[in-house]
Length: 153
Image 1 (cartoon, rainbow, N blue to C red):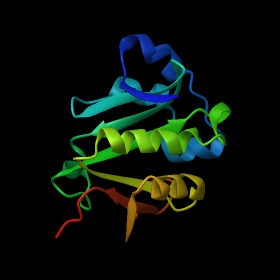
Image 2: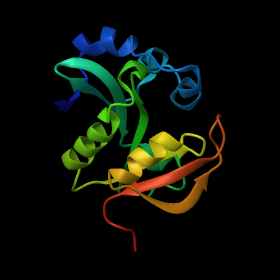
Image 3: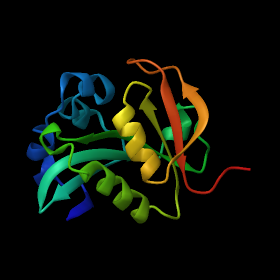
Image 4: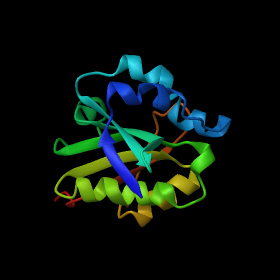
């Protein structure tokens, strides 16, 4: 069973050991490099399978301050990664379902690289909607802007 919990210091070695493919690293970077740079507005979470860390993501309360496309009421989701050894089993979809269940009263926003079709489909299945906008500031190319929660009027 998939669980999502706030990252604790005891999780750090397992999070740093999360493996991605080279192509995925283009999209999310290396989590071990990200951890020392976290700001107070970035809340790290781990994705657990039977108490084993298999993934990671950030909820970023400061996202609207850095990205014009994000609405002031939205929380950003960043650096979503499932260890490549656990991919292809539907665990990413389960994790995104848990994420939206835990944040059902919160408007969420994320970007996903246009080349990352598997992740895009996972987010859409979890209830995110593509508003047709693209973020062009990503290092790995254009990204779809996906939103979850109440539509902005």
